[in-house]
Image (cartoon, rainbow, N blue to C red; front, side, top):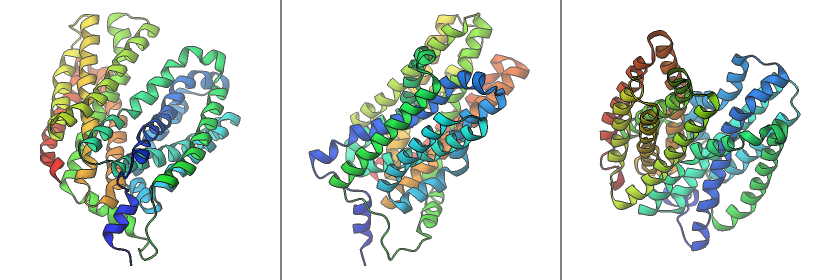
Length: 409
């Protein structure tokens, strides 16, 4: 029987050569491609609604499929990825993204397109849960913390790249964009089918392991205090960034009478600053800043600035600047939290499950944040929005104190 150590080593291979470390960049880019599937639906939905005569409710469901899947099953998905193997999850996830895009290309009604989006969502989680676990195994020490922090920028980067395509969409056509994404997914699937097997020894659980091992992995993760603390902090961060991303265009148009197009461009600028914050967290962690400190500073900044941003008392330029600072500094949190995953995970084998828990917390925040801000703003005015996000940010920053010393584990 293979020892626990050898099983861990095969599942999470250590960097043995420059050739294996060269996989880091393509792995991160693969995650960015997966995140682009979220942004793709956002920019294409007006054209899809016009063609298929869809209501806002159905359109919202098509956009929110990924968040819904993640909110319902992030931990379970992470445990399943751990059970079937990282390599298979990555390749299988890309296959599902390809299938979903091709089905979407041919979709003639909302039902077919919904099935296509569900396939894409399953593939999305196969990719974004396996990639960070692979990165955690390819690297170690400060390099691992740095890359895991940079990895956290995959979501805003992927969405932003799709948003940049929006002006060209009338020429490209939404179906052709779906087809292009499906083709790219197949190319990536072939690439990883060949490359990853040549430089790693990733394997699934050996024949002596029981089929319920993935359930035990989930129980271990949910039973560890630091894992729950990281999830709460991620939920708090996600509430902040997605509520502000949702609210800012509406806020600018309603309070400052800015055109929708200008508000969209300004919101895109703010999101770009958020990406810079994600990347900066990697450098700060490499320089010695503690994981818990990154998270606490990010969330406390959110709590203070959100009160100012939603006050309606500032000028347009001041609001944009504070929103950019808020999301920029706030971007330190997810980078640090992803970097914490290999440290706080109960065992090396449960890293995918730990990341799945963080992903689930992120998706819960993605659903809860915009809903709370929208409800408060609609009934009590924009200044009341801060009463939803600020207390959650403060609670998340306090929870991050439980992550002290995570780097030493």
